[in-house]
Length: 136
Image (spheres, rainbow, N blue to C red):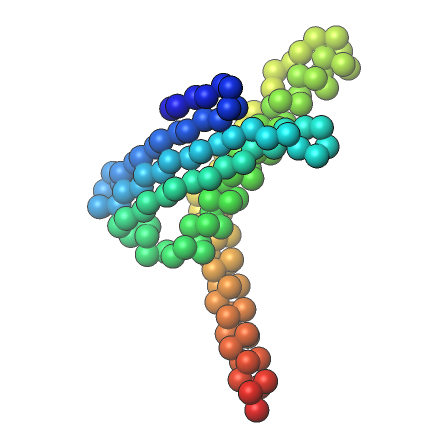
């Protein structure tokens, strides 16, 4: 991890390997805090992701869907944890324990990503059919 407090940025590097199989993944995530229009703070993230093995066969769309969903769930959980002590302190005079993160169900996430991929597939077919009719 590389932290630059003055620039309000952090670079995280991560990698992993399948226990069984030949799949590997590595990522470099650059995050920077920026002022948001509502007086809050926005986190801008850029990820350089490399995937090899069977997971790479799923295609860019499915990996992007899963990545976006996990990032959004992380952001929602972080927001809840940050805001919880303020709400509790104002209500009862003392901070309470932050809410626990919900576990991510792998099968449910996989099915959700599959449904999104199927939706994209049928949308492409629909656009192709529509373009055929427009040519006539």
